[in-house]
Amino acid sequence: MRKLKVLVVLILAALAGLAGYAYFGDMAPARKEVRMPLALDGDKSQGE
Image (cartoon, rainbow, N blue to C red):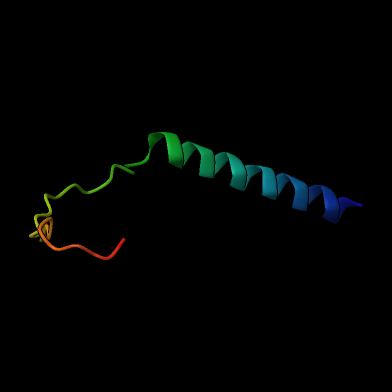
């Protein structure tokens, strides 16, 4: 029974640590501009 209590306490501590890291950690996404050419074939009919 004592091992079960220790396991539960460890799991709760891990969840609290994960939540704290999610709120206070540096988890901002890295942004970069992406440019790629876009070919528009408006003159060709696709048979639809």
